[in-house]
Image 1 (spheres, one colour):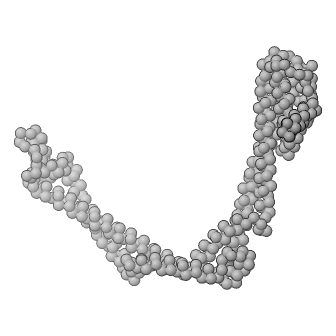
Image 2: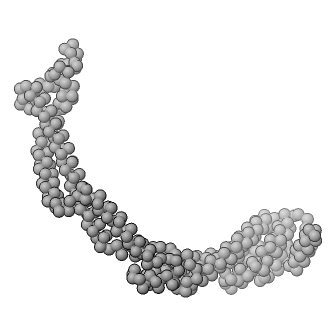
Image 3: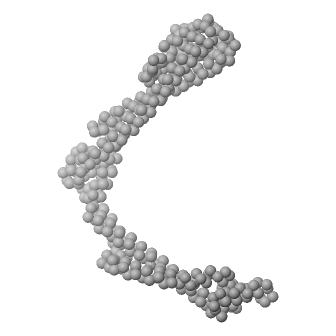
Length: 378
């Protein structure tokens, strides 16, 4: 028999080895992911280069050569139709634009609108000062809106508000040096109306100026587009060609990158499966350690300790590679270890257990059970 202390020490060593393997797998997966991204970028760049190599221009010779490499992609007749479509599209836009925009007078029109706008802003600003002085007088705007001094004024002599308004109106007349409320009211409303009209005029002129500027810009763009229809068609075909090539998996120019991507993805799939199995095993071992520590038993069968010392049941202590960890799991150690973990846990929980088994006994038991299942199905 071995002591429980020896068992727990060997168990801790075994867990540390598996955790080391888990960390190694994690680092390798991260490294593979980075390599996959890098190779995808290289593949994309290779396709970009291939696109401009296969279709550097729209000459008949270039289009014919591309048709031999990628049959059905585009023909010379289709290129001519694309040119015609773009010419027609630009022509329709230009025709619509010229209904409200005259290139011959555009600059003169812009200068006149700018001059009119400047005058409207100056006149508006000239009225803002006097009107601002009036609106700054406390109560003036309210009195004007209430109709004070007109037949529309609702307050009557028996209302206290009537006398308050009368007092405030007298104070405003004194402050403005005006003798007649009707004249002050007329001046206020005139300034308000004129200022509103100038605000509206300046706003309209600004919109007209913006429209002239936008139309002039659009006109320049359309003229430029007409002159470079071939470049537009070429860009459109480059986008389509890139999409076409991106879906081809047997390009010589990208084969090396695709192979590397596939290799790293397959390796990551295998490593993820291995990590899952190790995680299940570690969960069982942590539970076993918890049961062992809480048990009153002080001794364990010798083969429990020997099992944990056996290199076949844990990754190499001197530093484990992910490949070694995968091999460890693929040899069905995780299944056998889970069975042995169950026996050890049963021992510490005082459950009745048979004579401790060895690895070969477990292998025979598993094979016998499998044969029994198959014979039962036949």
